[in-house]
Amino acid sequence: MKIVLVPVDFSETSLHAATYAAQLLTGHLGITMVLYHNYTKDSEADEALVTLEILKTKLVQKFTIDIEILSYKEDDFVTGLERAVRHRNANLVIMGITERSALGQIFLGSNALKFAETKSCPVLIIPEQAIYKEINNALLASDFKNTYISTPSEPIKDILKIFRPKLHIINVDPTHYISLTEAHETEKATLREMFAIFNPEFYFMRLHDVDEAINMFAEEKNIDLIITIQHNYTFMEKLFKRSHTKSITYDSNVPILVVHE
Image (cartoon, rainbow, N blue to C red):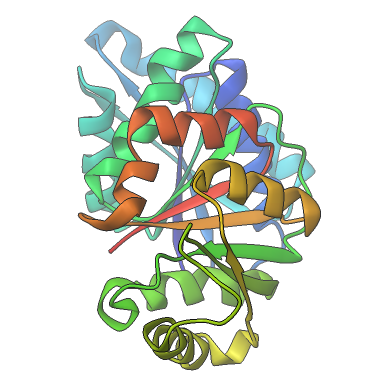
């Protein structure tokens, strides 16, 4: 991973996410954090660059990280962010989310979810109340269906290699019984081989509510990062519809990494 794009609209939510990103990436050589802002009027261009430079200066004075700035004129936030990702060949986007602030909800709340749906690149969503912690425990939610094809292992491993957390792989299915089915055992073996360098531990929860299961597990195991895969089918698609994703990201203080299939 070389380029991490952090969109900011200078709201408290986005500034919190930018600070969190700088803390998360500090000391990791070879990674450049790009502060990105999109404006809608030509008259805002100069002010945007000045404000970005001020933010950059504050962050580099506090954290050991390479930071660049980028600003575009674009009426639509998500479209502009997609363009910035392409132009900088970004490997990851880190952005905030909130439901308390009207401004944050418009720019970095619903748009965080909209951008995740574009599948432009992995996006790390930072909840408003998230307090920075080292990533020691990561949770990967999987539906255990066609995992060899549907699990984007390389982008996930690229991020895990940076932080080297303990990896917990969880499957939530109301049909689970005492022993796993042959199909589940096969998919488990595939995932174990796929993420062998992280020596993953597996958990199978017999619950109907995926959101509740993930939040319960995250609290019990002191999870520092939740990883979810956005499919075009299976129950994970439901997880990323507004009502489901909102309940996870807004109710949790744990950063959520969304990786598309």
